[in-house]
Length: 182
Picture (cartoon, rainbow, N blue to C red):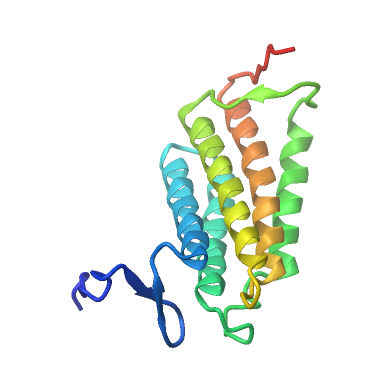
């Protein structure tokens, strides 16, 4: 199978199911941003994290493929629509709680950065927020279906990436840098 098909040379692409859409349509923007997020997490994983944290991110990357597949299928009865389950959201919440228990409480905003891995996790967090905005925008379009669990998952994932970025710094002995504004 060749990687190039030439079928997108006219600026259109296929979704799961029949039909083709413009490559800049809101559905493509939504799952394309989820794909970008997945790549950013892959980069963070390559920068050296604790084994437990890396395993959590491996599961997140798998989940993000499920989110992308659900978004690529406009059919509300499509086979990927239920792929993001409450258990996957709960897994993120439990990971957030466990990581926060290791960290000093926040009493002010912090600047993103620190170690390479932590900085990349903060980049992934901002891409996650953009993906969430794109998915929500898609959900507001009449006739477009978005599984609500995908929105919840992305919202929780951005929180997880924030806390994991802080934890990655702590594990390497790097302190949070407080915002010195106001």
